[in-house]
Length: 150
Image (cartoon, rainbow, N blue to C red; front, side):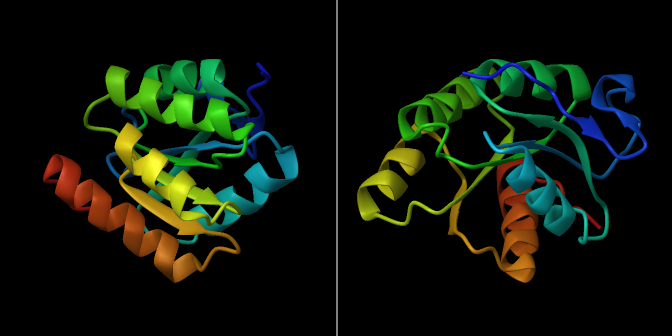
């Protein structure tokens, strides 16, 4: 399990003030720095959506969501899979209103069912469609919290 919180373009994630952006505040969780960057780029193409931090494992995911005031996460379940599924459970337990979008290369029905049972709002298979990811974030946020992102 990793414990490295990556730096966002423009400054470290830890320097952002929780709640300073009223839009969708996303933490990208993936064990691969390259995949975190690619996912962040796709996520930030949506208007009103900002990636506020990165995490490479369960411990940093919980820390980042709490510290940065995130209202959504995009999670690669392959942390390995057991850790990814446990991360979903831990996030759901600690942050009941958090939107949890799984984006993974694992497309098997067993993993999808396990993710849903642990609290994932959406499960998208990679490669990601930006349009599908953006719609999933907005739909899940509206359903879970009654908010709408612009």
